[in-house]
Picture: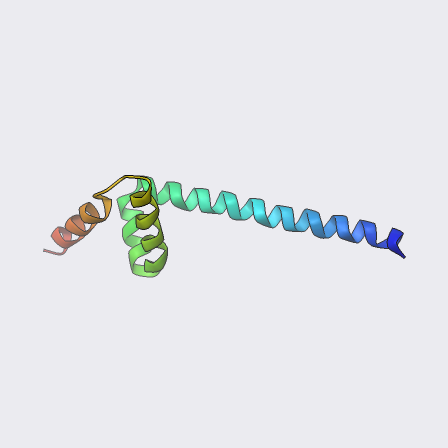
Length: 80
């Protein structure tokens, strides 16, 4: 019976690996897009503010400060 489970275990492992790789590439794409586009960050603020908050905290942890303030200033000025 163990012999018949090996192909199933391999398929499950490959499936989990593919899902993890898709998650990593998706997170990289999302971070890169937020890191290069202030307009995209504004879209994220409107739709997924909790994800934008994670972005701000992660770049502040890496020593980059002022992005949040620049965004807020631009968005406030664009309303006026």
